[in-house]
Image 1 (cartoon, rainbow, N blue to C red):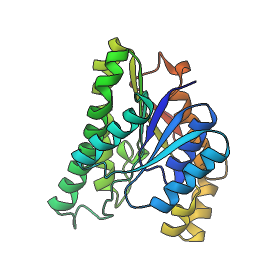
Image 2 (cartoon, rainbow, N blue to C red):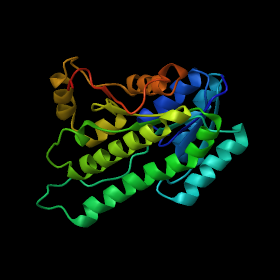
Image 3 (cartoon, rainbow, N blue to C red):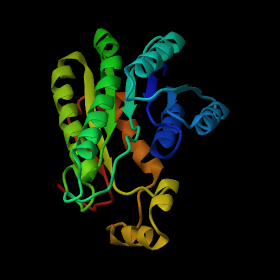
Image 4 (cartoon, rainbow, N blue to C red):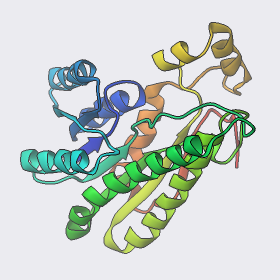
Amino acid sequence: MDRVAVVTGASRGIGAATALTLAERGFRVVVNHRSSAEQADEVVQAVTAAGGEALAIRADVTEADDVAAMVQEAEARWGRVDVLVHNALIPYDVTSFADLSWEQLGGKLDRELHAAYLVTKAVVPGMVSRSYGRLVYLTTILSRRPRNGMITVGTAKAAMDQFVRYVALELAPHGVTANLVSPATVGDKKSSELLSATEVHQLGATNPMGRLVSPDEVAKTVAFLASEDAAFTTGHCLEVNGGLTMD
């Protein structure tokens, strides 16, 4: 295989696991990062050590020039971009509605949608010209099931989810799919930094499978949607949550 994938926010967590999983399956991978050059280089080294091809590119996905330069560099290196995995985390505030400011809500909405818009706009023309492409976006159950304090991220991701469905509808006749992946809380370093050991244990215990999802498990779901096997799957959200929610 000589498919090329761009993975945003790929220096750690789900993004890094996705980059490694795609590389294992024969993709050439762009490991995007904003400020984690050392970790991104480690991902590239791991891919290379396993016999794959990867390239680390710094780009802020909320900046048009950065996104354009990243895609241009990928195309200059490997000729095209076949797959986009938009995983980059856009920062947000945890707050109640009572304490919420428009700057917090509007700022998160703007940055979330702007990033999704920019990375999609940058890769879609080439995909349409080749009648092939896979677009995969990481989302959260908070976009459909509210939780106290999560109004900014939940609202912004809900808007992104609908954006992806409109993109899927328009691009379906061109052989380009667009889908969402929604993981439950992931058992990784980030979770241990944000949550106490007790909170992590409780989250795992309340899951029907009795544990948190791993980055590798999320990455494998992303890899399916990025593959040729998913040619007739578009406009959908795949939940990777161990049965925590069932729709």
